[in-house]
Picture 1 (cartoon, rainbow, N blue to C red):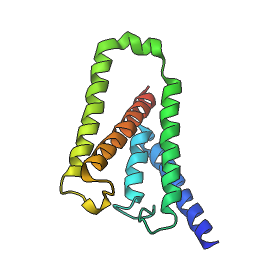
Picture 2: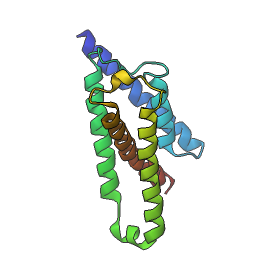
Picture 3: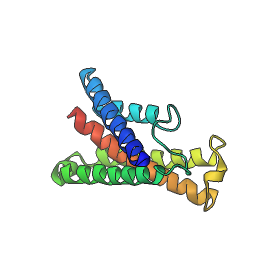
Amino acid sequence: MALAVRFFTVLAVMLVAGKFSGELFARLRQPPALGELIVGVLLGGSVLGVIPTAPTDPLTPVLQLLATVGVVVLLFEIGVATELRTLMRVGPAAAAVAVVGVMASLMLGMLYWRSPLHRPEYSVTGLGVTAVFVGATLTATSVGITARVLGDLG
């Protein structure tokens, strides 16, 4: 019972903080996604620790599943909203920006994981494989977030 109360409390804090920060940034004429990202970092394990991320915490797998579903829904929403005719019209310039954005995210994620800025004990399969996975994950989410921010800006 206590675990369910804790889960719904964390979920409520995440949703309320995300909504308020998004509204605040919209009033400041900034993309709401930026406010949501900032409050996510603040609530996460690296700052306030409201959102459980420890491997031993029983809520961690549940929140990881919700995060994965959230990324899938975000990317699906971007795909549904994308108009191929408009995309083809902007052509080579948009393709170049997209390729550079994807490659930069991939390379920076891989370089970070191979750098001494994190603890290598998190690499279960090996440093190289995990570095590629981290880079690919950052690429997928950065593309989705970029599309969301551009959509917010109209």
